Amino acid sequence: MTDSSSSQAPSSRAPTAAPTDSLPRLLLTGAQMLFVAFGALVLVPLLTGLDPNVAMFTAGIGTLVFHATTRMTVPVFLASSFAFIAPIQGSIANFGVSATLGGLMAAGLVYVVISQVVRLKGTGWLHRLLPPVVVGPVIMVIGLALAPVAVSMATGETSETIGYGQAMVLSMSSLLVTLVLAVFGRGLLRLVPIMGGIVAGYLLALVMGVVDFTPVSEAAWLALPSFTAPSFHWAAILFMIPVAIAPAVEHIGDMVAIGSVTRHNYLERPGLHRTLLGDGLATMSAGVFGGPPNTTYSEVTGAVTLTRAFDPRIMVAAAVTAILLAFFAKLGAVLQTIPGPVMGGIMTLLFGSIAVVGMNTLVRAGQALTAARNLVVVSLILVFGIGGMHVGGGQFSLQGVSLAALVGIALNLVLPRASED
Image 1: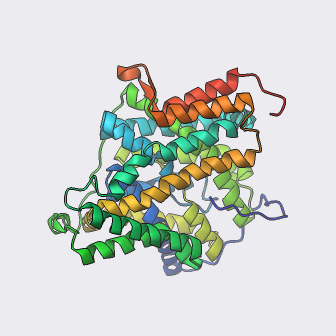
Image 2: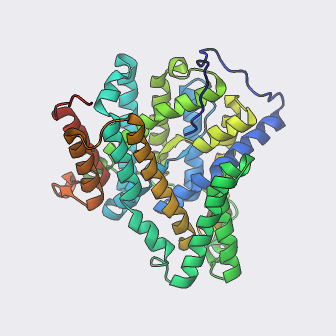
Image 3: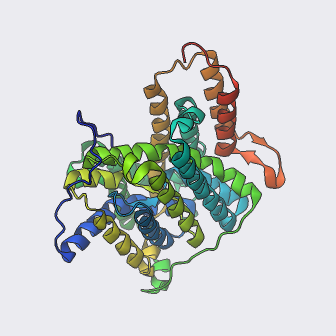
């Protein structure tokens, strides 16, 4: 999310868009937005075992659904959500891909329900139910719960053909390039640190001779993406539903961020209830086809800031481009040849950065974490979520992020508020 601010309040009038008076210009600008989002878009399916071509297809479909819901008013692109990486990995390991997709559709339904309550009641109840003392540590759990998986990939433990030495060279090189671009990059380079790290690691892997091109030679040039149908199981649904809480709250910040760039108050027009509804329907549509949940992309918000491309039609062009690219099977095959250690190096930074977002949520709230009430809420969320606590069994087992989120919400409602709160 881009933290842009100004002393002047955002206007409720439509922003003045950068000129897109010709179709070629519109398509070119849309392709640029897709390029900015591409690295993060394909990272989620590559880390979770989902199909990257399906993720591109569902990112395009989800973006179109969002713009249809919000009546083409918000210049955003929706694609794979980082907040769901660790939960998807855990859910696939426990329940399988199809059941996980059903759980993700249920998480999208949570967005839809929240959007309708916001439409009827406003946002005050949301902040009371999910204050920073709950949301912050839940986001930290999302980032840290599967941190050992990132380390295992980075050190080559999950690879059968790459040893520890080669794995460390690959993972640390991709990590270093990502860090340099994120900290020292300028212009568009600063918006694509993940893609830069992956490309650098992949080129190094080519030099080291550890890339297997068998999937590329066996793949057709054009083919339908490997769509997977969802199935619905209570265990997977209960596991995934609470994960939607943190991204739903963060969605408000995303709308404020893009609104500060375009000088338009999207919380009023088209309204937060419509943007939440569009996000939820986009996530549900992704689950129908076998893709990861969708969310508004901070990278694209940064690109909008840089290029002043405020026209929502640009994002529609990017969405159509993503859908078309999804049918190039060779592209998906190339992405699947990226060695695990390269992705592991990126994951070490990614999971840590998600945890830092959670920490920042707590810090910006300005609450005393050593106060007894806050100490209890934060401590139990972290230990239950990261430590592997589980409650129940069979179809009604709660564990990980889902258990941590529910425990935090319950404690926040039950425990009396101290005077320093």
